[in-house]
Image 1 (spheres, rainbow, N blue to C red):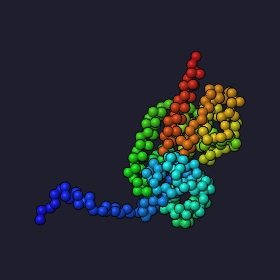
Image 2 (cartoon, helix red, strand yellow):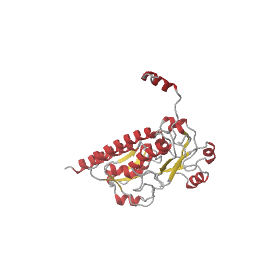
Image 3 (spheres, rainbow, N blue to C red):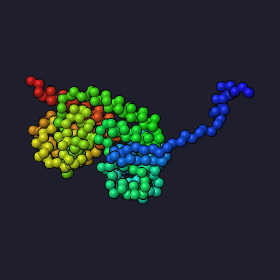
Image 4 (cartoon, helix red, strand yellow):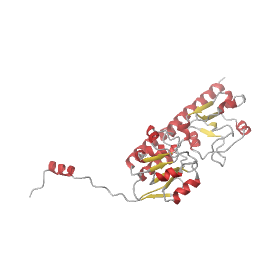
Length: 300
């Protein structure tokens, strides 16, 4: 008997129900070196921080989020997802009720005791702590792997890397600008060299004056800032205690004398997610302005 015509073969194939593709165990390493293994793709995910929410959406896993922390306001769809409470003190009862097959936590921001408790309950936890651009791109790919949205994750990670490398090339030979990054006034608080903010500064030719301190978010003295005499002071837009005004009385500081006191977008810069590239573009333009003002001041 002759074989069916190609057109008939195609019609028969389309009429058949789709065949499920078996997916074996999915395994990745999180930012703390822990192996996270799922027996099947994550379909009920809880995010414990705004930046992990953004990473999950970039990875294509947004439709599988069933719970997010407070301040998870980007993208807009995150606002429709049930809140599991505060970043540093999540509602464990709510998380357990949501029956997650994956929790994505913020290593330095969430309660270590709560993360440990989730593991005791045999809930897989991916701990996120990106401190450079490659870790963010890799995070997108790894979270996509756990949710079997690899194609979406690969596309987003490639776009992120492309923008990041372009910024590196553009600003790699810029002159150094010393920066004090102030996140709070009382107590006076900054970030050290291990934080993603310092990576952004370095990409733009900036130098964090407190990069060498051991704590991730150390408190410093006014005297220490005056002694370092930075070229610029940056503060995030969510610092509600108007931190820049307090420096105006130190008119001999280089940053004050040149009016190099800047507010930067907090959601872009403080969240180690995909929008950190937008933050980098903003910071790089700001530091270029500092350089321009310095040249104009030095000109005879």
